Length: 198
Image 1 (spheres, rainbow, N blue to C red):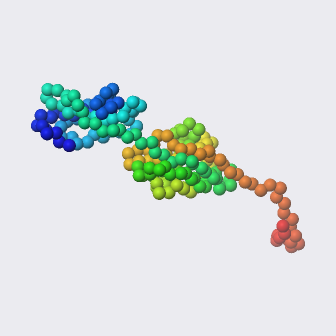
Image 2: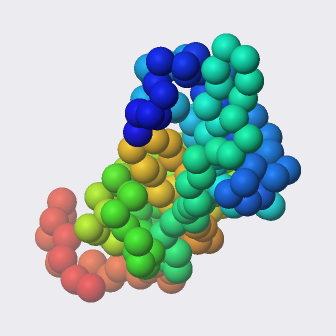
Image 3: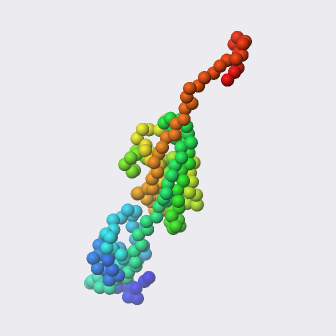
């Protein structure tokens, strides 16, 4: 909103603070020139636990105002949870099947869920196998090639319009393998170059 004495304003200073008055404040950026109507805050910007407000101080050529305009800070923590995976590809070292998860209550911020095969250290050695829109909580995928030995988890990272969440929800990657054993065939066809039996 434009200040009443706008002709005196030269810039704004924007801070994270522990209250609406600007206590324990930490400046977000250099001064913002008058006329600027928004400030972009990059994803994963650090915030101290005590920071509960964003405050904006108006500055004139002589001084910075003592009473800021304040806005309560909302730090969203939204992600899919209860991730599960069932491997229906019965070949050893090949996986494919259905990944399921429970949607969070507040899905309005989520644009999609990215699904990866991942290593034991979250975020390391990962390979995307697909994505699902927030209206869906199921993804079917098949990896025909042999799975690299470093994969041990299915990782679901929720994504907003700004960025992918840095911490995923996880499920153990279990490789189902089924091979028949003790196979026996008895040829009951008595003709040469022909077989039949059980």
